[in-house]
Amino acid sequence: MSSRQPNESARFDRQSDAERDRLEQENRALRETMKQNDRDRVEYLQNVSHQLVSPLNAIKWHIENLTNNRVTVERGKKVLRSIYSQATLAIHLAKNFALMSNLEGDYALRALREALEPVEVERLLVNLADDYQPLAWDQDITIGVERGVGVMPDVLAMKALISQVFSNIIENAVKYSRRGTTIRIWTEFNSRLDEVSAFVANTGIRLRPEDCNRIFERGFRSQEAQNAYPAGTGFGLYIAQKIVDLHEGCIDASTDKSGETVFRVTLTVRGLEGKARQWDKRPSS
Ligand SMILES: Nc1ncnc2c1ncn2[C@@H]1O[C@H](COP(=O)(O)OP(=O)(O)O)[C@@H](O)[C@H]1O
Ligand SMILES: [Mg+2]
Image 1 (cartoon, rainbow, N blue to C red):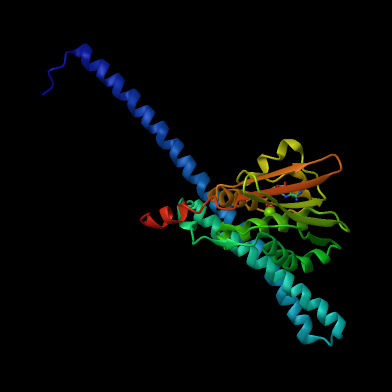
Image 2: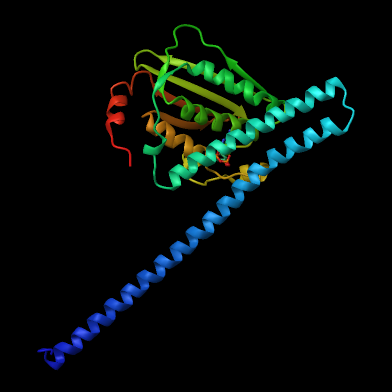
């Protein structure tokens, strides 16, 4: 039995009404957010499958061509080159999607951690340039790695992840370059700071100075990029930044009046040396 007076009881009812309204509002907002998340997820999966299907279809079509028709040796070489480049693209996309589901699942970066090993950045870039060159040739684009002179120490890094950072940057450079241009890649060592920087420069669609930071946001794609290449997720540079952050390095983009876009990734040579053991000690959940 309540010992409240009538006035007090009315006030109590008003308060609980207000509280109920507030909770209902919160509930509605949460349900709306969940619906939006579901819509985003469906859209993302459709995007993923659409992007993966196109290189796989291209491979299938090329193989059909090779097996059904009489192809000259020269033509055959070209077709094999295209199969190689489409397979490179499919692998690249699949790796990005795996990384993205890690990040989205909020396992965040810990799940991405793997053993650190000395990485020869220049060699990694040469290998990636070789991988992407056939794709670039299809658009009359050349990828040139300018070999540095002098000492270039290895960087302690998670090789597969760092490789994906450069893969994302070089794939963009190929995708967004103008026909007939050259993509320039080079590395620099700053002995004073004990840092290795890698640069990828290309000329093509415009990168507005005000977008130089936004391009690392999840899902951001400039209007120019959407026009030039409608299929895209806007996740490549977001993933790249997360991986570089994990290495306590820096990634940035700049553009100049000539229209050249330059991506720079800087990693400290021994920055993670002491931390490798700390990471290993953390319990995995
Ligand atoms: N080389 C480049 N030149 C000009 N703009 C670029 C370049 N690389 C990336 N961008 C811009 O950054 C955006 C985000 O890139 P990314 O995260 O790889 O997503 P996506 O390639 O799927 O659009 C691109 O949509 C484009 O607007
Ligand atoms: Mg991209």
